Length: 347
Image (cartoon, rainbow, N blue to C red; front, side, top):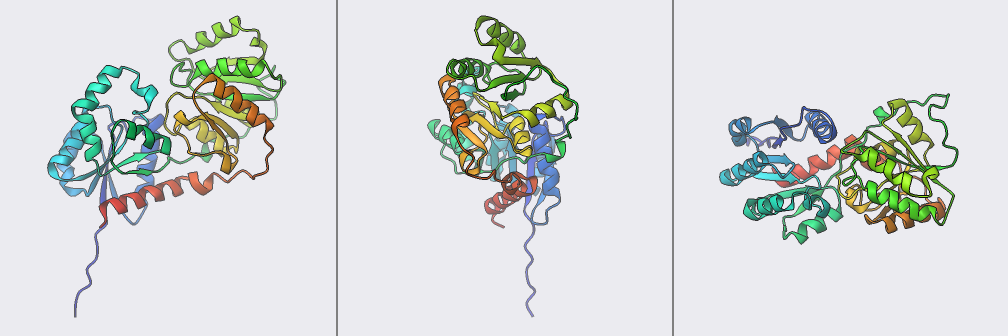
């Protein structure tokens, strides 16, 4: 009698030195790791440094490297190439044009010397959107990609108080909430675009809230002093969690005009509250929002932002708001990652 062979589960290593540091991507990658630990189709190991990688690499079937512009991550990929191991890279939007413009000479040298070779030698590249794929192709990176998102956190939605915490905002408003990063978060086109809109319509105001970052607060205050629509722009600065929830609940929509990003958390929080979203393609958040009735995508210019607000105000809600849990729950997103790992390892 023949003994039936049992296929072993593929073993995936997640290489991310910051995985336990909290905040932003570390929280997401750690959540992905914990979700993967509960599945029955693959086994997964957390790898935080090159010393650990050197001792574990022969035991894994594929290494997933999170992030790109780092010598440690480059060495991890080169080690996979040297030993004939499959590896995946998540670039986290670091190759988008506006990101590449920051310290461009260093990044161009990195890509020219070994970055392009590493990316083109990868088994797959993980992306968030088709927009990111097109930008990779412009850099002559032709490795096949797979698209997966990080999940939403409905457990972070807090109940709002009956008593209003923020006063003085009477009209319907769009909300920008996030780090006040002038360049990355697009505060320049947010303010300039809203003024363009305000010149032709008095239907809606703008509320801005978030923690200061490299002079973002002063930038907003100085802009408001110099334009005739300062009474339509409500700048709150850093706010409490309870105030944040109140603003999310009351806002007509969340506006987020990034020049570059990757699956931003403030927009995922908007989905948890079933709020519509106005954001740029460059936020790397979605390929399409309209078909789900989640909002609108636009290019990262002030003119496009002004038109998006007009479009948002004019549209009639014919479609129902697609339940974000259908495609953005952690269970769904983790399942997509699992399927991608299984296809890659093909065990």
